[in-house]
Image (cartoon, rainbow, N blue to C red; front, top):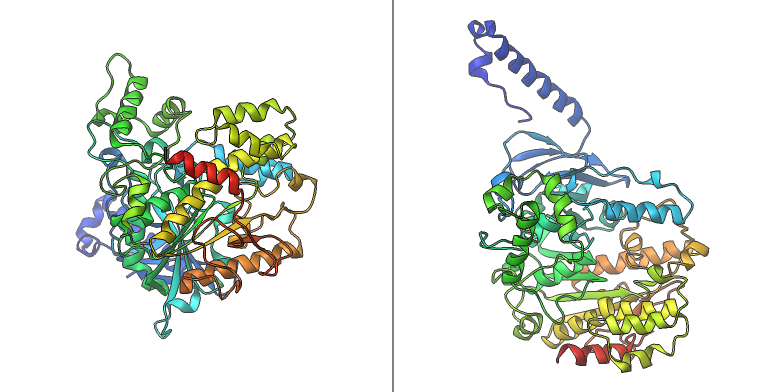
Length: 543
């Protein structure tokens, strides 16, 4: 049924003298007619108690269902509470447009606009971002025929968790649209989750934390319950993400709370994953008091009052209070049960297969043009882990200051943590494949960025922005990377798409696949990058 009308009221002429009821009746009829008119020729599915009316994607044969709620709005008394399962009302829902992004500063939007400017496009290439605290929605792209009950084999499912330091970013950024991936024979889901103070926060009056992670788990539960309606296989779920999204997945893939919700993971340029220390719930609660004092130093508000603070006011104050704080999962005893070393040692986790890697120049663009050698000395001294004289000796082989700074930052924040995580997962008997993305696009602007943080995303999704210089070689690399990601989601191994890709067991010779162009899958097998820096890193985190 596409709409409900109240027959008891609307069917009795004696009630029509009540003008308000007449308006309600007319509105219901018009709404029904509007939905019926919209639904004509649109893809529609009965999902979670509602008829979702989607849209045809930019790729023929792929349908999109956008802005689909997976949890109740986390507002009012539900702010800083575990997400509540969303239950449909029994009517029809338009699912042809993205829902607002979660509350955040414009940091990522500004990054996109800055990138567009670098490549000669105006900042207007990116529209303004609509944000709301009511933001727990997901998007699904699926081959049209996949939802046909006559199709015998359900398709693998790929669930994407976006990055943005857990304080910004959104599920439908331009490079995250899943139509090209879905055309390869998978069902793609992108999920939203609460960010910053809304998602990674606690308080002495709150029993828990990690609300952003809880949102991701709730989205995975929605996938398990509903993805068959889109032709997906709930027993073949690969969760993939980049940057903080990858860091969140690292927590989920080792968590008992994820059992039955995921089987495989792809981590792209993830953070430090909790090396050497994951923060505690007590530390997170103490930070909650900082926020309360910032709102009212004389009489810090209790949690009920904090839940009533206007969302934009809360965001503005939190951005100042936590401007130097990285919002990350904490040990809550439910999702994150212990430190990373202990979790890896147990080996009893939902994850069965892992594909993991980073980019060659994650931080080069921040230092391009740097020329003062003393900057390297300062960076080493300020490094959290790679701060030894041996590190400075290793970097001395790179006279280019910008490259030396990038080597240090990339190794400490992305590369070496990923090697450590991959080694721990392999040690527990899981199959692991590791990559390095090294592709630099053509042109002077790209040379100032090199293989920057996030550079691989348009290749993984096949969504190169119009203002990016994209050659035939870039498209060839795109097809190969998409094939590998999809093959991994389908079978648990990328080898059929990249036949020479060896399994990773520990840092060593010729055990990492380098994504670059031209690419042949054989000469691009390289040694684990930065052996000396990562050896020092491994020693330091054990102290």
